[in-house]
Length: 277
Length: 106
Image: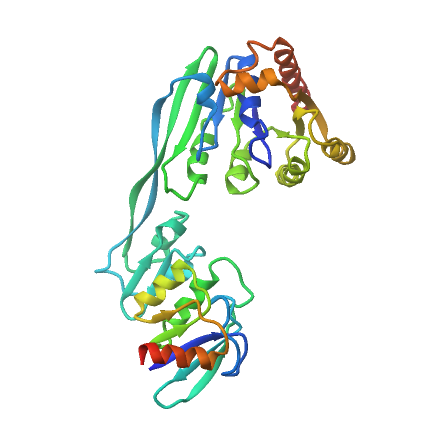
């Protein structure tokens, strides 16, 4: 079973929910897909590098190149520009390494060369195995690294995926293969605005979803009304609480000190099991 | 010198366009003979990488220079690689921008 914890807006509590849900379940795998700033490990402990993540990018042999433009015309991301009479530019930051340019080249002028874009780390914390991805600074593409993290789900046991924020490609990739999406929001107009976008993405992916309202008690009732109108289940309301803020800001998990929350998160998982069937 | 000016209209009095990719027209002027013609930008309504598409096409027009309001980093590199001088941040009527350009580069 793969549960993705996502949101639209950043900073609503995805990691708090993911880490604490993993801890109450025990015997599960937690995967931090926010590869531009993975932070689950901050709450759990030391990680070791598990594997390097390599991309194959095109390498051009200009002795063979006839500057025919086939590759440049093929590339929808405009990563290759052929300028007459004999000049070729490769924009690495635009390349979504699909390998298509090497296939369309009639002159064997395009090969592939490896580029390390980041790594995957692993740690064991009681029954919870945590993996996270770290994208190298300056690397533009998070999706290939998230795809590697997705491949960790071998279908055996419970996998909790902590998604990056937003609703763009990295989130869509994280949702691949999921059985259920938990959307964490805060009950404010900002939270609601981005929740609506996230709900659209999850519905497009054809996944069942439920909402966790974090910092319940602040803001307004917009999220509650939206969920009622859209017939979206509210799985849990985590109250605005100084105790949570203090535990979080000192890098601690919540469930050891908050048995009520632990029980509630266990109930959330039971509910997800019922829905997924 | 052959200079292209990205413009909002087909006249030499038309304003310089704000963006190379979305410029509706390019007016190409031969500054030695003062002959000129305009090209409609078929890509003006496009998105994603449109500046680069346009820069690639302009790079095959045997130009010496291009005058434009704005241009992205990739389109700029393509034009520079093609040996074309790029005058960006230009605005106002195309002919005035061309005169000013020629005073600097004449």
